[in-house]
Image 1: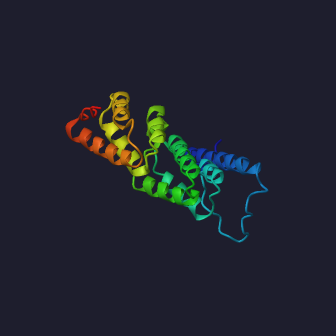
Image 2: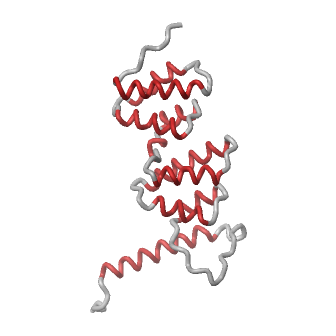
Length: 196
């Protein structure tokens, strides 16, 4: 006899919530020392995904920003890939000496505005190109837009862009790249490489 007042779906949900909370508890269990104790009497904060906590911990980001990232990520379909991509971007930016919090807030804005490239950045060809030319977010998104419009031609497009940018110096390279991408979007092909 099942308890008639208990809908089986509800029972499932209860179990799942319990599991998620257990997972979150385990996650914070190992680094208790470094954690800021929660202030007693503060209302229970809403459930933060442990993966969101982990990435914020990695970059020393706390407080309100964790909740913001958690909220922004709710709508994302490729949750894990997005967070991996976010980690790569954060790592790159902090290596360049940018402040993790500023970078994270900019990325949260991009996620909210649906301008976050996400799993495209996990593509090694795309990431190598982004890293090689140290593209800023705007140009990186532009590149990914263009590549997504040219399905199946990613490798050759990146190779052609590489050929054109081969000896362009920063930051002229960025301007050149944007012009090349605009040309690609308009005409579907790149202008021929400059003759030496």
